[in-house]
Structure formats: C-alpha cells, structure tokens
Picture 1 (cartoon, protein in one colour):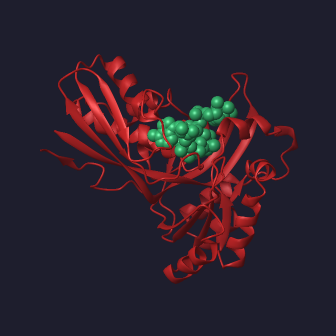
Picture 2 (cartoon, helix red, strand yellow; picture 1 turned 90 degrees about the vertical axis):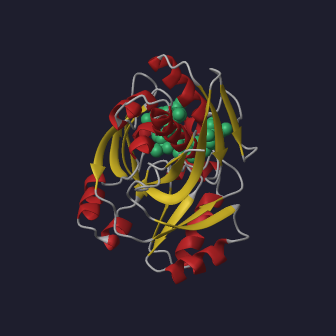
Picture 3 (cartoon, helix red, strand yellow; picture 1 turned 90 degrees about the horizontal axis):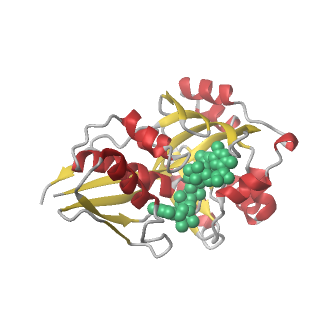
Length: 297
Ligand SMILES: C[C@](O)(CO)[C@H](O)COP(=O)(O)OP(=O)(O)OC[C@H]1O[C@@H](n2ccc(N)nc2=O)[C@H](O)[C@@H]1O
Ligand SMILES: Nc1ncnc2c1ncn2[C@@H]1O[C@H](COP(=O)(O)OP(=O)(O)OP(=O)(O)O)[C@@H](O)[C@H]1O
C-alpha cells in the first residue's frame, strides 16, 4: 500500500522578532499562509522495519539528515512502530529558499504515516511531534493560514486571504536560516510590521490592506548578505506587483497581483534575472481532498 501527500510551500505575510530567548531561539510573531507550489511525498509501506528515502532532487540529503526521514524516525520511535517505510520525495519547492520546503516534507510525512501506520493521532499531536524537528513544522502540519508565535509553534488559525496570484522569485543561491538569525541585531530593528493590522486585513479579506502591511524584519539582514534580493524586490515593483516581500529568512521574494495576466508579466520580466520564478495561487487553506487521498496498489 502507498499513500501520497502534498507538501505545500508557505510564505510569510509578516515576520516580526520580539526578542532573543535564553534558549538561543528568537521569539517570533508571524502571519503565514500556504501557496499552491508543493512537493509530493509518496510513502510506501514495507514489511521490514527500516526507513529508506529517495528524492527526485540531488539538492536534498537522501539519508537520515532529510527532515522527512527524521519525521518518520521520530514517529516510529515515539509510537513504537515495528513497520518500515520507503519515502520518495518529488521535489518542486526550491531548497533553502524561505518557503519551508523541508519542514513541509516533514509535516506531510507525519500526516501520511499517521494513516499508513494507523496511528490515530490528531493534527495537534502531529504538530507537537513536528516541533521537535523544526520551528516551521507545526504550521506545515496544519497548513492554511495562521499567526505563529513563540518559536513558530504556537498557532492561531486565520481565515484564508482573498484569492490572488503569488509570483515567487528565488536567486540562484540558498540561505541558511541559522546564519540570518545569527546576524540579526534585535535592538537595531528599524521597523516592526504590525501583526494586528495584517490579521485585521485578512479577517476583512482586504487585499489592499494586506499589501500595505507586508513586513519582515529579516529582510534587511538577508539583503545585506545578498544584495540581489533587493534588486529582485525593485524589479517586482517595477513590473507591477501590488506588494512585495522576502519570505522567511529568504532569499525568495514574492509579489502579489490580482490578475493572471499581470502575474505572467512579472514572470516574464524576472526570468533570466534570477534562478527560479513561479506564478502560483495563494491558497490559504489546506489542499482539501488531496491531503486525504489514499491509493492502494
Ligand atoms: C524563518 C522561518 O522560516 C519563518 O517561518 C522559521 O522561523 C524557520 O523555521 P525552521 O527552518 O523550521 O527553523 P529551525 O530548523 O527550527 O531553526 C533553524 C535555526 O534558525 C534559528 N531560529 C529559528 C526559529 C526561531 N524562532 N528562532 C531562531 O533563532 C536558530 O538559529 C535555529 O538553529
Ligand atoms: N526534505 C527536504 N527538503 C529540503 N531541504 C531539506 C530537506 N531535508 C533536509 N533539508 C535540508 O534543510 C535545509 C533547508 O532547506 P529548506 O528548503 O527547508 O529551507 P527553507 O525553505 O529556508 O526553510 P524555512 O523556510 O523553514 O527556514 C537545506 O540545506 C537542506 O539540505
């Protein structure tokens, strides 16, 4: 038997850092939402007890360092599962891009194995286990739209933002999240985004207000390390995006537009200028139906 799970990417509509914590992590307040760019995780039941993993991409580790592998190993250990699994990751989300690709693969693995191994865990229980793997994993378990606080694991669900197009542009290189947080000087943050204003804009389904309140305190840090992020942002605005922001720790920049024709114009304008460019839909909700799809061979 095998199960197929979609692992969608997220973008940060806001990312604020409140302070550095004694445990070395940063206390965050961010609004995140799911977009229609996803990896696919196939989980194939095996009778031997080992976990094996392959991916269509050579850019991710194909062993126990992979976050999907770590999710399976943690679940197996915590629940005392005797069965094994072969994990195949069809990679579509750019790696080390600020789009939570690895975290979403881990989350999809948790959701899928909960079914494959008949564990009967709730999403909240899966999210709690996921928090041990990475700060973005709990959000990715639930997907949709939410405010994330704490290390990223304290979630308050929000309604989906109004439908629009999201143009994602990633420079050729990736960035290390730890590096970006390491360079951030919390007492020198010049402009904090208003999480409250973004929540209100989403609740009112107000597209203009959402664009007005986009903000990410990590953006200047990553721009300092990689000036092309600023150039991509400028180009996006020049080609007609309504709002532009770097997602997570970057380096991916996203631009929001209402109409498909405008999204295409942006893609054409940015192609050749940066590594990868995609026009995708803002989803804001979990992939209904698709996540629950079980195929039996
Ligand atoms: C930047 C974001 O993507 C925003 O969604 C996340 O905060 C990062 O989530 P993630 O990649 O799952 O992060 P983790 O794997 O937990 O942490 C990677 C590194 O980022 C830093 N980190 C992460 C989260 C947090 N609240 N404070 C931190 O300082 C730490 O140095 C940590 O070692
Ligand atoms: N399944 C996976 N997919 C992508 N990267 C993975 C995976 N497993 C482990 N990694 C490693 O994790 C690192 C971060 O990759 P990822 O694509 O998750 O970054 P990201 O999009 O910046 O994440 P976030 O937004 O959560 O900080 C990479 O260096 C990669 O080698």
